[in-house]
Image (tube, rainbow, N blue to C red; front, side, top):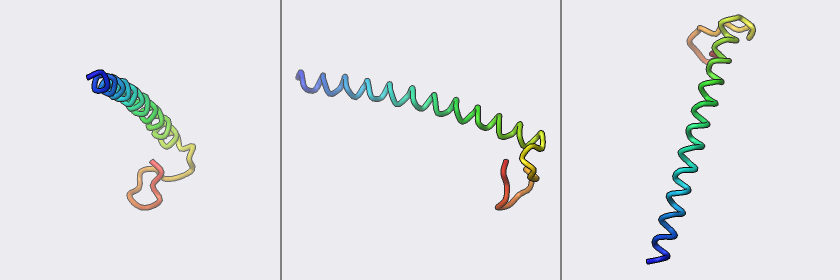
Length: 58
C-alpha cells in the first residue's frame, strides 16, 4: 500500500508541475503573439503581414 501511495503522490506532484509549466507556456505564447502583432502593425518587419500565403509573417 505504501508503494501505491508513494507513486500516487509522485504522479500528483508531476501533474501539478506540468500544469504550471503549461500555464507558463501559454502566458509566454500570448506575450509573443502581442509583440508579433505589434511589430507587424507598426510596419517594423518590412513585410506585408496581412497577406494570405506562404510568406506570411503575422
